[in-house]
Length: 109
Image (cartoon, rainbow, N blue to C red; front, side, top):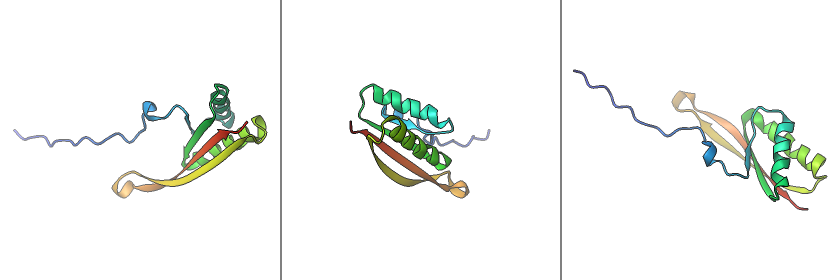
């Protein structure tokens, strides 16, 4: 009888929903106004701070959401801080760099 090779368990690369802080919105492929509504609902609960996170092509959507919320709903009453970064995704030959953005919105009024 031949022994089967042991498989090594590697940690999952996807982020679990429980690992995401409650004051963070992950931006993806939904329409801009869907995220803007989520931001407004978050601030309507009395929160003063919210983080928008996006990777790759969703970065432009995250910037649009931050600008729509700030200009249309708060008339410039939010302060924004932006952090840019790069993640290495994949392994070996499939490894590639993916740009990331983190926009922190703080209510000033």
